[in-house]
Image (cartoon, rainbow, N blue to C red; front, side, top):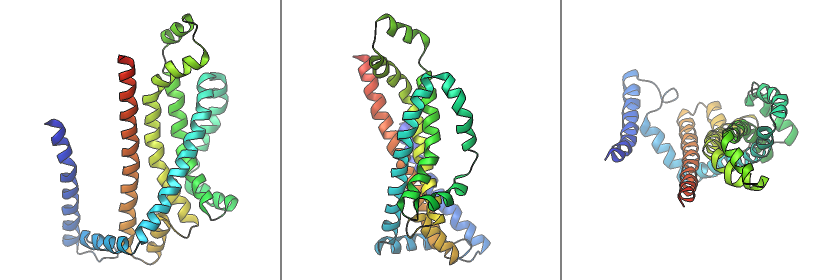
Length: 255
């Protein structure tokens, strides 16, 4: 019953937000180019969906975000594991990794376009850069979360390095690591959009920039809401993967 009530709150919050949105536009009397009505945005959404504009641009952004996330996840995992196993190396490199995060992706995006061109590669790199750090940090924290007693037990049992990795470190680090994937896959959408702001001929970021220049706030709202829905779908996909993997781990531990 409690779970059903929680699920019921989701559409109720959405309805309340739409009602508040319409009430604000009605009370304030704002013109469409400042704050459009929810109905106008919905009608434009249907129009863009019917002529294929929304699907084409959303598909391009989704491809860039997912591709960049996979690149960032791969490098974050491959670099994070040895850093977690070698604390001196982590202490020597981590200051530079942390300092690099102070540079906003919007400042690096022009360099990505300069180095990799206006094609998809520059957007992939922008998305990968912004998704890399949370995966890296959670990988380090997850591997180091293994307690000393468990490692001592594995050494007592003469476990090989692969057995320690597969049977101890992976199960212990998995919940924390998957938390990093949640953050990384959401941020990858931001990286892709920022790359499209700088230079692109398609994508939701391009659609936002184009709508902003034309003062077409209705289309801009459609693109923004589409981005929110995309990021939410990506996030829920990782949550679903997390539930499957952690359930499998619990069954393995029970057996």
